[in-house]
Length: 112
Length: 113
Image 1 (cartoon, helix red, strand yellow):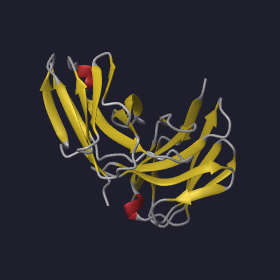
Image 2 (cartoon, one colour):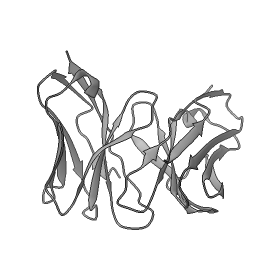
Image 3 (tube, rainbow over the protein chains, first blue to last red):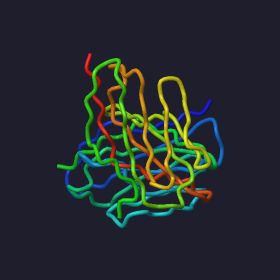
Image 4 (cartoon, rainbow over the protein chains, first blue to last red):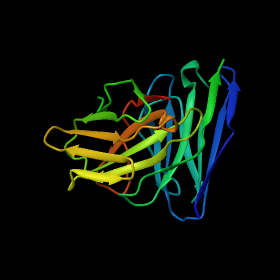
């Protein structure tokens, strides 16, 4: 069966510090991978998606970047965090449509 | 540009009664609609879906209705149970290999015992 792992579960980082969140998928190959963010009181906003190794599409201009160094690994990064980067970050994978997504358990990021 | 709107941020229902969650969309290209349920500090989980070629899909206590002309869909939960208390997101998608889901703003459902 397929599983998705996301870590860490919680993170408190000072403004200006770097960020690296990792997501890995097991039990499938060539998945579509996604990073979403849920800001306080807001819905789920798509940040990045990837249909293959090294292929990254950005949905919203921001202070973050994503990379996919391996087929089942998706990384969300920042060189310098802003207060506005605080939120709940979710990684997800899917197969070809119309299948839905399977989400990871999320990372609560607080920038102080 | 908010393509998907859930105009009720919250809904409170008595246990055993019907819960109706609504979702409106603007993009006529959406052809597949999913509902997700989310508990605090957890990732969303898939609940039910409907294709644009249908107007109703039922799965146990959950039924989704789609009105394409009105660009409106709704999720009915009957009977509602306290364990249904969560945030519900509608998430349409349209063609392409990327399979991008566009999530609504969510509705917090509270089922009172």
